[in-house]
Amino acid sequence: KSTFAGLDLVSDEFADTVRSSLQKVEDLLLSELSSGDDVMTEAATHLAKAGGKRFRPMFAILASQFGPRPESDDVITSATVVEMIHLATLYHDDVMDEASMRRGAPSANARWTNSIAILSGDFLFARASRLVSTLGPDAVRIIAETFAELVTGQMRETVGVKPGADPIDHYLQVVWEKTGSLIAAAARFGAMASGATSDDIERLSKIGDIVGVAFQVSDDIIDISSVSVESGKTPGTDLREGVHTLPVLYALTGDDATSERLRELLVGADGGSRPLTDDAEVAEALELLGSSAGMAAARAKLQSFADEAHAMLSELPETPAHKALSSLVDYTIDRVG
Ligand code: FPP
Ligand code: MG
Ligand code: MG
Image (cartoon, rainbow, N blue to C red; front, side):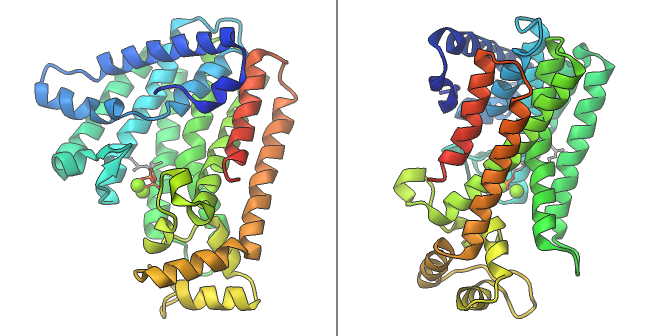
């Protein structure tokens, strides 16, 4: 459950190494999230127990393979800290988004209350802070900076694009801050903890950054192009919520008939986004977007991220971890079909 699809593509021996490190992360995560108080323990471990891909810990563990000490306890600590920060943001995100489900389970705010969800997120952040202190002041500074980026991305998303600013630049900036920054930190942490060279630390962090943004863009494409049985999600969710993702933003800039009709459907009288409530309109928008130039542009952007990540990877030594990272990049691209 806590492993990642990309791992099946490398040798059994290497997969076992990664899996055993991920198990240690799992154990540390649950012990760090336990409190003397029953209610706090139950709420704070709720999302960790609900599942999740453990994508960030895996990235940290893969990055650690490029240093001389991948077996170091600091690698496990680093991977765990990053997952705890991620989980903390999810508790708060579900309150802000009024989300009722997360990872196939009720969100903490739905299961309990907003107050309990907010306090649980704070508790996770407190425990992550305590744990990261054992890695030294550099690690504390990196996590503090990353956390500020995450929150700034969330603020930017909440406020929306400023008048006159490019909505595509705004979108990519938010995705970088909300997703890229923490995956970049995961890679940086894993590589630092195992003593990788500073050049390799920078390369791995950059790959984390690109993969994070690419993963979000692939999610956006899937929301438009998927058949729901394939992705396990309902297509058009973003359109119903009035969220304009990258394919939509590109499609809205066109001057053909498709773009014209999409503007009628998706842009309100005030120039802001128009959430779709009518099933027929959702179906029409999905149909138009599927074959639009905007969709092609988003796919091209995704491919350019993959090319950039592979170029960065080519500067790292050929190891089993190299192959795993490479297949992970391909997985991010291939899942859009
Ligand atoms: C998911 O986005 C949310 C994030 C990636 C993190 C955003 C950052 C915060 C909520 C700040 C948290 C602050 C504290 C103090 C813990 P999404 O809503 O686009 O994705 P989803 O589909 O996973 O909900
Ligand atoms: Mg959300
Ligand atoms: Mg959100």
